[in-house]
Length: 323
Image (cartoon, rainbow, N blue to C red):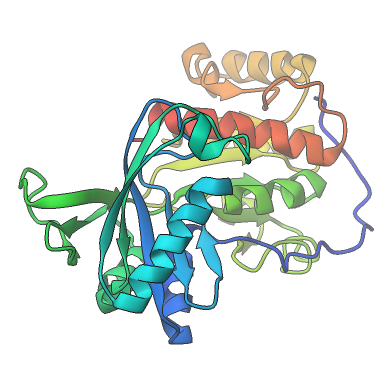
């Protein structure tokens, strides 16, 4: 994928359907004041449509936020959650996803799913708000009496479920053009915090990016002095041209990014990288850490396709390098 110099006169993107991560939904659910039950998949064996830790809120009026896998599995748990809400009694479940259970929906994974239904989850409001705003890893759990609490000793056996929640990884995007505008909403949905860096305030603005995007707009020499965040950070260089890409890379190559990618062609990589080595800006070992062309090879052509290929690679790298 070569660097793109695309026109910036497209219509602003509608971000009204932007979906926050699960823990971001909890403060809003509490603010509604409506009764809900928290469903958690606490254990799986074999194949299942969701992993351990999948969660959903089941409201008395039939709404669901989050997912436990959809189809007949979620419908069954929703029915149990409705009954748990009516009785205000917590429950466990263990469902075998076999031919008899899931034939109508095609859900015949063959695995076993176990979990919890907590109809009094609102009582843990302090924990939910703390997890939504966490700036460091926090561990919470469900005790054997179904109460929800912070976990001080993970080795304690008196828990039905434990989970450590970390703040989202940071994604720094250098550039605010079409590729950045397509990447940012995907990254936010994929549990990254997004900061866009550019010297063009007309583009690096809420007109083109989701509300949750953070902006750093200034001269590049000031932008490149920005201190790194505390959480693991990923960098993406997609400025308006090769010269600006190289300018950012001169600085970011020396930053402790968990992963660093730059848009461009193989020829661009050779030219910039050889110049960096010749001028002593970076070593070959340092440059080997930079993915250029960035993105998984899926024959991407359009800007949305390029954004998908980029975020696919960042998901892979996050899984490989971030606990």
